[in-house]
Image (cartoon, rainbow, N blue to C red; front, side, top):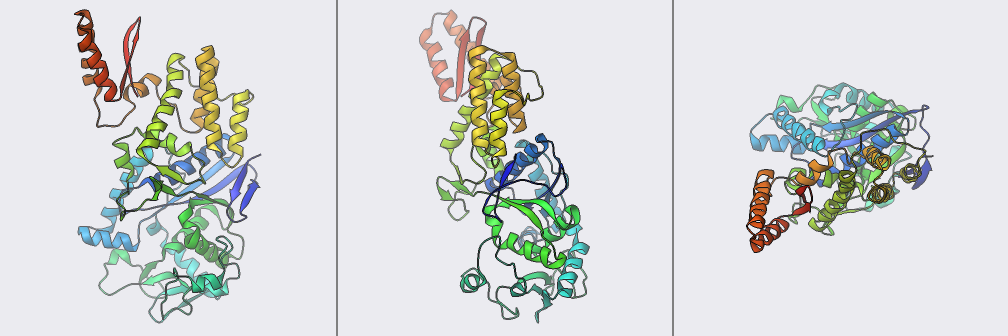
Length: 459
């Protein structure tokens, strides 16, 4: 029985969908004004894993991951670049899809853009105003009256008193209370038409929190099963989503809240100011995309993830060991035999709050079995189980020979060096042959001499 750690309950709970055998899941996606970074990579890979496991468990899943394509940062960046909002956001949406595809992330069933749901957002603001939870301030903004919603703080565990005294509370005289947050931002003088829409409160644009409430409710219903995102969104974003959605619809918004852990770099918080901020495409210049996916999945989704070259190198070596087992015993693509002992252990791990570290450990046990027995059935089971996590689906030889990103020796250069080594050995120039082997090893290329000839793989 699948159990999920529910942030709202602060405990692992048995997963029971609202509708039998169907799951409706919403995940907060990207704000598209720049290239995706490692934190985005973790969100995409983690919830792709959740999506895959729910489907492997027999559920019919509707997965929504939104795109924020209107935001103060987007407006600022477009102005700096002297380009339209649409041109800017479309470029980075395309880049996001390239990064996600490289990481083996399946497209969600719906990928709504905020600008496509303005009418639904306005309708929600009207409902909140009707319910006495929204008001228009003197500056023209429409705000949410936090103190009028009894359940505020239930997700984050924060009390109104603590929040009132906290440093994170923005003080604005036009708000009835500093805790109140904006639902509809009035248009500023001189703003372009593409960043404002008509409403009963005047021209403006939606607040960030409102976007997800409107899109989630419209596509999945007023009450759905799972809402996910990074731990940094728990407060205030997800707390405000609950207040908006439950305040408007007068029913529970989401049953299970899932949050993945932070990404750190060499044990420090990732930030541009510290100079340790990496985009996905920067990392993929150094490491194969499947290595990055494996690195993310080898950690439990709720744990902090510490990025470093050392950890990526270790992940690369570990993934190489799995592919090496499949190289020795080629495996046809097949369905998982869920009655087999390794598969049962894999399932038990995944059903225990998506425990991918334990599931990956099962893959290594299976790889050891393949190496020991040379069993085609064990190899097929290894490939099928790994496929549930989006791993080991490439040709093993292809991965082992080309499993690094651009920047090292290409295949032609490696093969030329191997031919030179063969020629040196035939000439009994063993010192030269050893030098070539050593140089290739330093470049991350391991040579394997067999009776059939010399093959190579990336270390």
